[in-house]
Image (cartoon, rainbow over all chains, first blue to last red; front, side, top):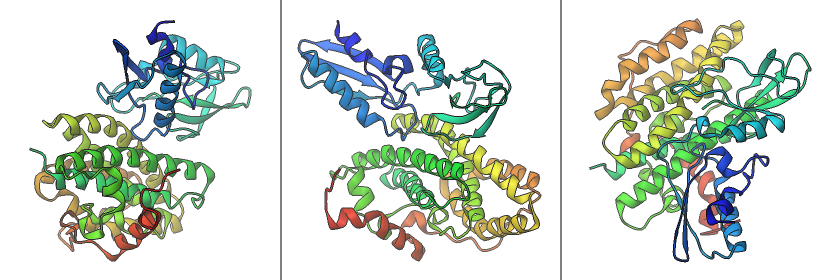
Length: 153
Length: 235
């Protein structure tokens, strides 16, 4: 496995079905001799998962034989949900988490969210804030199942 | 050249707002609101950490975000008075969040396009978060203002009580943002059937110079007590 793949396989600590590469949090991996530099970006400014992500990257690299990597955090270009890959969106949906629509401008309009369980578009927002900074809580009116939705951002 | 005090002002607004919002945790009117206010507090804290780290680097005296948050006295804080005021009623919290998030959104949008690359990067993220906070505060302001006679009375009371403190937000360089701020806020107050207070009355200030209300001391005592009793404590 090359170095990039080692880092790319690190799982997001709060959305355990997707990797940091799927989410678009991983920006770059460079190798200079023994020295690995990893560049990541936060989703929200206060995302509390960043410290765990850094520790997990260190652990993964150590297991692959790369000691003491440098982990750089960049804010530019700012992350948006458009950075989530198609593969990442499929994995979220398969885990019962409705993926975001495209973000447009400073506030994304949520035009409609399909239930990740039964596929019905007949859904409603229960709370604009959910279990993590990046999610809102929704409910399906067709199958009555509540579900998480990654907010377009 | 960006001044240390300017960045501290931005960071302290966010830090003190985060601390006030976090005080609602487990006390909000409903469970969803607990989660919402804690999430907004987390966004504010995230921005505060980035801003205080930058302020410490600009100052060049070796102070990091923790030293600035935990080891400054109230006279060294540069936040506006609005954020430190107590929140005895949920309506006060929402009026404050409405005024603050509209202000932060405009200020971050301005900074995102301004010359300081570091501030611009922080602002470019934070402006999206502020827009979401503004949306949340607007929904509550309308729900309470255009609600029952009791909720209307309390929402109007909160708006009236906090209005004088909004003048301080536009001191100095940011006077040009007030017309835009007024149009954002007035649209929400109108929809909420609330009366916008008249300008020209009492306009307290001094926060940016370190002259605060007594409320900041109590807030900082709670924020700082652990770090001061056990310097460098970690878990």
